[in-house]
Length: 308
Image (cartoon, rainbow, N blue to C red; front, side, top):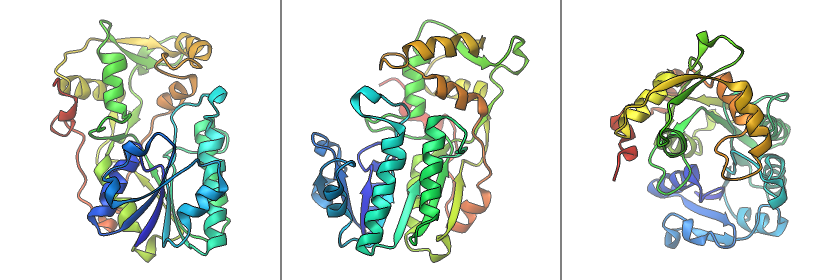
């Protein structure tokens, strides 16, 4: 199957490309100028150079394919550089959906996120709007909503390695965030980490399973962990023993609202909001249906965090 893949050079996209090739599919990638060297096995992929804001590049990528995977996503925006949630999560997805309909490419798989909602953060609301738009097309769609995704980043941006570098490597206790004044719930919000290889398998298997059309799948690993437990496991895998301390989130959000426009600041106000909401789901039935044996979130499977 010839598959148009948007967002193929990032962390998730690299694994989806690899999984497509491992299953004898033919990936067609739209890649920004200057990012050609980020493509996994470029000699085995069709690479179109262009921007997601360019209609001609989108149509060139989708034309004569059998399916579209839209995987473009950002975790923070920089409006002065034209990098916004609306442009990447919604407008880009909408243009790809419209192009697919014009060109008669019916199969469309969308990368969304667990916890999306209309009245959420800009990250959540723009992904939610993309979902709603897709559901109102004539396309044969499937939507995946992953929780926290972990795995060897292969030089890309990934949650656990970023947490290690931005927080656990500092000579300070790890923060156990909490809202309000009393720290009884410090670090108790939960996530359901899912391995990147499992996510890629879900996407690629869905291409050939007709029963996934018109379905939304929330993807999380077999077990949920509190923020405190995540810190402990990531620290252990990184060869560190990290002290932890309750941290009221209000002053941190205030600092983030001032400095988040600068790339050096490690977290945004919206990221803190979503972090404290938690991010869990039960994907037992999805793993069973897709016949995927989940990879656990453990120190063994976090060995890529160990000092080199």
